[in-house]
Image (tube, rainbow, N blue to C red; front, side):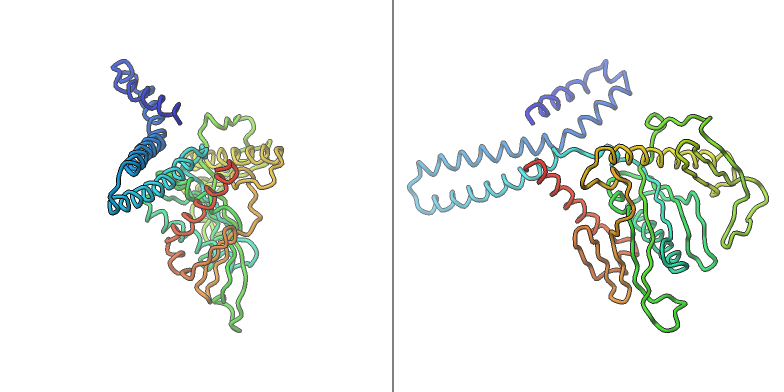
Length: 352
């Protein structure tokens, strides 16, 4: 941590250097590095100040004879010790390795799983939940590709979400989401179980994943609406196939073929990055891979029980009886709990 403070001081001086100010790209790079160091350095300084205060209080105790003042000093030492422990925990957390993708925008992919039309309707419910959550966070969300059903569900939908720290929060949503409820079409009132899969991919930069144009097959077709009917007569929709990996991406949201092609390539680039990282993780044979490391979507992560208004995250054993609020986008409590559990595991693995 002492090295981090030295670097912090060095960066502070560099950012006031006229030569650095004149080189905006370098100045921005140093500014980002300083911003990343600041929370840890401030905690380190706070810990040092508390330690000095406690040492002074202990010295006074050795010299003091007054009973009331001694009681006060004991309480003060206990308070300072407790605060030092809290700051120490926060400092250890600040030193944990950060996911390099945390500040990136994402592509959210939701697909209906087992359950037919009911699964497609649940996929639409999940899209609405994430859309409401994005609105609460001030993020921008746009539909890139969607395959709707006749009764308002989605067989598959892909959305782009842009904003501050989007991936850092939504990355925990990848996996199988299960729903238990009585379908509107069910006359006997029996509860059905259906599922949808969610994948959250950080948007890849061109420099991170280079795509050879010769590896692509690009087809055009007419956009379709619910039930598969054509909604326009121009070949504006685009399907891009990456031949080496077999990955296929479609986009039909824009009226312009060029815009659809650009969006499809953005999604493809992110899927390729996720694909390559998954291969690397498999080679390492980690016993418990992280969501982004494995790309494994098969694990059931959450259950939405409508009759009991209950939502349960199986990874951390969290159950809340506020499903209605969650589906309206109030999922911060779940995400914060997942973040806290992840940090606790990281601290445990580092001996913190």
